[in-house]
Length: 286
Image (cartoon, rainbow, N blue to C red; front, top):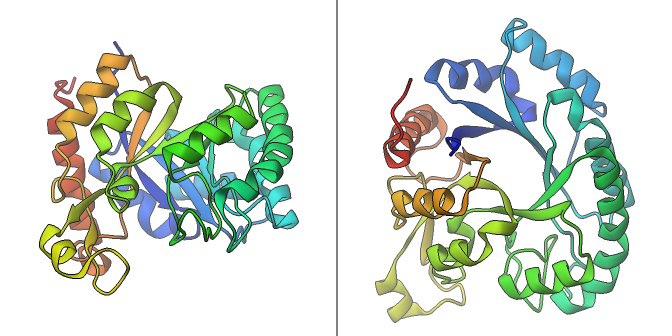
């Protein structure tokens, strides 16, 4: 049984400021991510930046991410293809992204376009030995009015995997994105773990009193994103499911969302998350 590695998400635009401190903390791997914009234009240039930041010392980049809407934005689609073609530069076979959407339209209407676009992306990924992991983030969309990602709900996953039946496409999963939909995350993890290629370490805290008083249509915020250890999820249960299923990937903390551990407290939150997740993992350090 391989140990699930615990890493953290590093926004590519802030690599110089964050990565050295994360390395010093003891994170075991890193997810290098870009959201909608890819200012560097060329991943070879990003690799050179990475080498300078680390002084040439090896660090494990477990995934590279480009979160975009490839169903509606051709430039973003070509950038995602660039990530697939060049993941090997970073020693990883995992590219994380969104499934895309037809903005403002229901999930079902996007499936034919998804089938065409991701059918070709799957072929490209298979040829390059790359896996695509679709994040389960709604991006403020709902089923009948999506924004840039249809891949946030298990009903959509069933439709997506039926439309494009390829092992090159799986999920990047975290409990918080399901909890904002009031989905119980652990049973879902048990059901879908075989299709989950990467996990984000982000939790949530649900305020049931506010739900009972104000409902869930946005009058009051009823769920907060939290650093692991401060939300409603017992991450020992997460590791139990992962180890029981033979999962051999990594779990990367996604910071920058906690209402307390952010900005000047971000590093403190990252350190707390690392310590907590290592404790939940339960495997002694060598």
